[in-house]
Length: 260
Image (tube, rainbow, N blue to C red; front, side):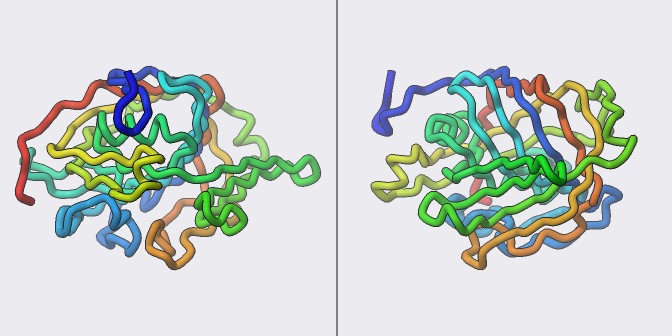
């Protein structure tokens, strides 16, 4: 049944299929800088993201071909670990994320406190150079992208795809997401930008065939604070998950309300 946002609720768990590009930030650790624009100021209560604990970060681009709310594209930023009032050690957090449909905007925010906003995506592969260019822009300024990545195959290396699963990763992939604010404007409501009142935790899983490609150019931000203007420590080798990748998103676990 549709709600005041005019969007059907699709509760977790979700099982999705698609393809993805992972841009690793500080793959060998050492990051302690919570860069400006890491978190969208529209979403979080003051101070909630102040206790950054560093670690390996990630920019991810995902093209979902199948989800409970239909196909959509996604760009997200995980700076690293943050202190949480609900565990003795820090946990990962998605602090900035853009998607191409209002259905996943609403449901991602409601189900998991994932602070999604709408954006316009473009994927272009040059027949001349073989390079793939990914751009993401605000709907109001589609010709002025705030994220650009240019990718190309690495000779020999990119031809080797291997089965991979996040179950093999050594780090703790549990996310603790703080409650988020609704974007209380007519456009925010039209976009499904709902708010929540309690923290949520979840541990997603991803699996499929993956290979490495090279990032030859990247642009971040437009100076408006809605995406970081600079992301440090981005590794040139990008983990490319082939089409057919599976992602499982369990139902979120509600955590006690916190004053943090």
